[in-house]
Image (cartoon, rainbow over all chains, first blue to last red; front, side, top):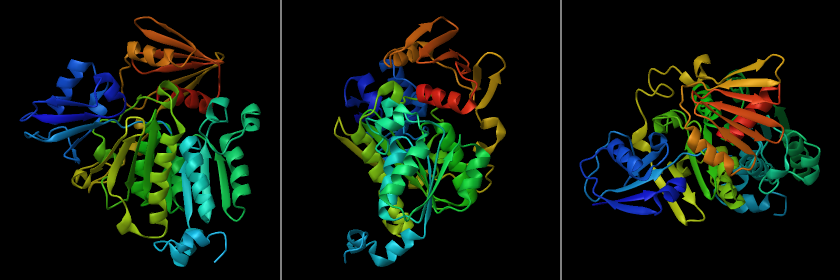
Length: 77
Length: 339
């Protein structure tokens, strides 16, 4: 299983700060698409992803036990 | 030791040498809203040699809750932010050479301003200017520090040309049209936390202590009590068009820039995003309703009236700003509402 952490407005959209998801073998892009559809998450294609606190690109494959964090870049200043 | 910088000089990573370095450096801050105010005050108090501040907007009452340099009188008189800021900053430290520029930071302006500075601090409210800043930083070889906040959430990352990944390496899709302070609100501690991360890194750069730089993208949520710092080293892309081997600086090209046009005789400015986007009008309606003002939506467009401006937003990203002929004013309204 994988722990998935949500930041900023994504946390509000999901309604929890983390989820337990079976994501092993999926790419980051696939997981994004899946969660986006399930929780109606806005603009997931622009969200940055960390796997075990390291930046991960959309084509990176997730392993069992990896902790995934979704970090939205925001623009306010 | 009782000179005005004595406490900073007693801090050993800075010391007297570091203070001398700081007094010889020139920093450029783009945007003088909440983040810009905070960074400018910190650097001026720290004894920076020269500071150039740029902003296209004027002070409004809704700024006063977090934009620390401005007063009620500034809001009453609608003083341009950089003018009000320069006045206050000069009172704080008259030995700093201050340059205040009222302008919409265009590509050519940014290339020009960046020539003679040691560091650029990002305090803008939109990704278009940030991406331009990113490519200017790479082209001129000057570091820049990304910072942004919304709600109780904030994010920052330091970009050193030829060393770290650039912002284009990190963002596979540029997030145009995200949440803004005007749509999702903002609390001042989130601003101050981003400012602390940006000015902390700035001081390290200014005294030349590059080994102490964070090298991580930091993000936090002060209300949800979350803090994360992620490694980005492996993200530096050889083929990045902004910082890779065969770079073309795409964000400096005319095609990528937001196109504006004043519509004659209509007191209206049209703004077209530089990259194609499709607006989700339904989602936008929800965001804008929270701001007050009046929202009307049909399947083709959304109309939003706020104060003396009316925005008409089309699905293809095009926006008409009624109630002004001034491009800078229209762009300010546009980015405030739409990111």
